[in-house]
Amino acid sequence: MGQLVVVNFVSLDGVMQSVLSADEDRDGGFDRGGWVLPYVDEVVERFMSEATAGAGALLLGRRTYEIFAATWPYADMDDPAVAAMNAMPKYVASRTLKELGWANSTLLGADPVEEISRIKAASGSETVVLGSGELLGSLIGYDLVDEYRLLVFPLLLGSGKRLFADGRSPRRLTLTATRPTPSGVLITTYRRSAER
Image (tube, rainbow, N blue to C red; front, side, top):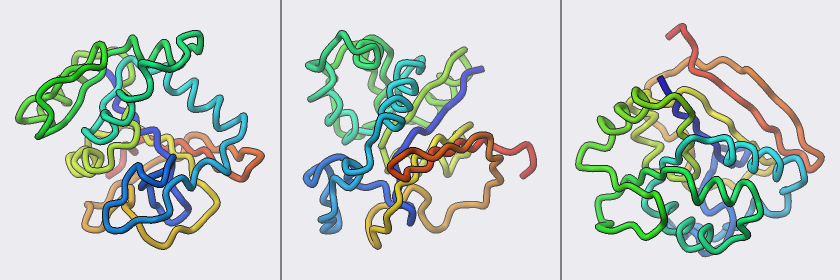
């Protein structure tokens, strides 16, 4: 059975909104976009490259898919992470998209939770979720996430969309790895605990 792995950037107060650019996601008047860039060092770059290149497939929400599809097909294919991202299967959860232009992309149907459960059951590798805040809310709510690889950035944003929203059922996780980077980012890996 495959594993569903979340790889995401979060601020110390749990915000995951608009990480790379000011205009990525201004929902709710969020004006602090691009907060990740000052902290991206060689360890963060290497970790993200390995996480991407090592994935068997990607699972993305609509907004993240559109941002990636506008960038990754045109990036340097000599980079192993770029080549892997363009070649691997990509599953997209969206209520509005009708067609997908990025190679190897599949639009999930009316019941994405059921389809994601089938993808996990049929896969022998990791399906990685990047960004995709709204989709993550559903995945977390249905307890489909096997592992969280979180890059925790040393800043407090005070507002914005959070990875773990209020109202979620309690979950026990087990810390399996932690590593600081030169810029102060803490890379943590948590697995679903056998205990509930």
